[in-house]
Length: 174
Image (cartoon, rainbow, N blue to C red):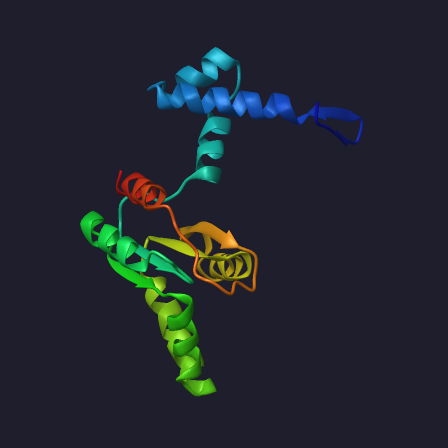
């Protein structure tokens, strides 16, 4: 049991998780918000707010960004097959070359241009270290679909499961 105390109340977090799971299962099976609310004895607006909290945008333009990626060519091919609008995937060697071959101001300007470009996409699947993913989320907000490949600093290419990426893309496409 996982309890938290809020003032005089003792809250069972597990009970909350079970109710949320039940709401989502019933909604996935086709129940309307009102039908689910009536069956569970809760307010329909709670279900609406719950869905809004967890919503990932559907459809729209998708970008795939990641580094350092071991199976770069495989993910690029997958992204082309699935119609991803923008792809920037780098190996560890390529990311270091990107940094080393530019002056500080040029690097800064290119990174800022990339950020501005990514803001035009509805969803950005971002593959990287915990630090880089957190940075992307703080800049791009809820449009980021995070996939953490390890803790920073990462010093070698990481394999990314193409099935996972394909599944995310297809979910985003609806």
